[in-house]
Amino acid sequence: MKKLLSLMLGTIFMAAACSKTTPETFTGKEYKLTGTEPGVEITLGFAADKPRYFGKSAVNRYFGNYTLDGGNLVFGPAGSTMMAGPKEMMEAEQKYLRALGTVKSYKLDGKKLTIETTEGQTLVFDEIGTVPEDK
Image 1 (cartoon, rainbow, N blue to C red):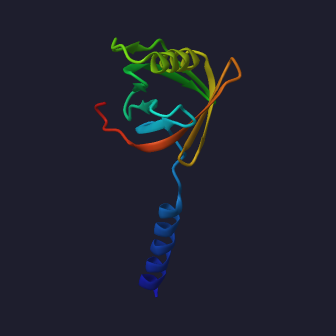
Image 2 (cartoon, rainbow, N blue to C red; image 1 turned 180 degrees about the vertical axis):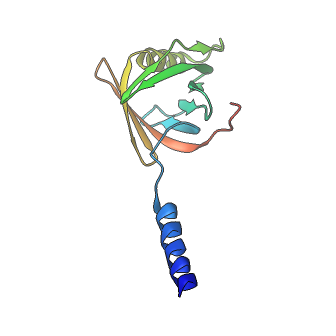
């Protein structure tokens, strides 16, 4: 009888442990900005093991550090490569990087990341994958 009771309790505890969900997080994931002009690809990724962000900003690659305080997300200054591209793509890149510097909050809903800026812009990203820990 004790063995049966132990087995039943063990099963209940295992089921409870497996049903716990981990809080949603954007760390270790990469996203693609929605609503861009055709041919313009803008991505945003977050390192899995440190507060670093990176991505493609239409023409160039960019990277930097971020801080997270509750629902407030603040991107530090971005470094980037310095390639030139078509005027429309360079303008989209500049507009995006300026917006990134004014981010105030974020919302994560499944595979959708929404970022709000102090200028009233809303940037919506769709998750496109995970990133390795050393990124």
